[in-house]
Amino acid sequence: MKTDWLQTFTGKKFFPLEPRIEDICIEDIAHSLSMQCRFAGHSKRFYSVAQHCNAMVNCWFSAPEDKELAKYALLHDASEAYLSDIPRPLKYLPEFQFYRDAEKVLSEMIYVRFGLNPVEPEAIKRADWELLCEEAMSPRIMSPLHPDWSARCDPLINFMPVSPERAEEIYLEKFEQLFNK
Image (cartoon, rainbow, N blue to C red; front, top):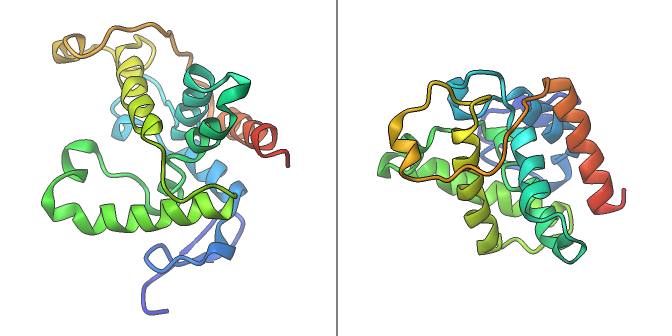
């Protein structure tokens, strides 16, 4: 391998730009996502990416007929466990195409690793955007709220941020439930 590597929570040597499917581990994903704060840390309280993924499952895909979409929802940010995230204003600039390409490769590999089709359903992207608005409008997460958010979103959910340790537990419980592990 030509690229540099990172050590994962479980002690693996992981090459984010040359990933190997056998190195992808749900315990690493759950732990890392539970330790990463949404909104680049610009929130009132710590609110993890793991909790965000769980919220997406619970708010949009909790019906039994949505089980396949729920699996995608839980894993939709899993690549961030190995690549971290880049805030939206930067992530979609032309200069960050390399990041989006790496994220796509890794996301597809993660989906395949856990038995899913590598192509993320469009419903996941829509739900992610809707949840972003819900989270931003929550007074427990973003406060004070910039007025531009109110023009975009109509809040329905009141979030209660949990600790990283609890977010990790919930993430792994949801994984076991959805993937029958």
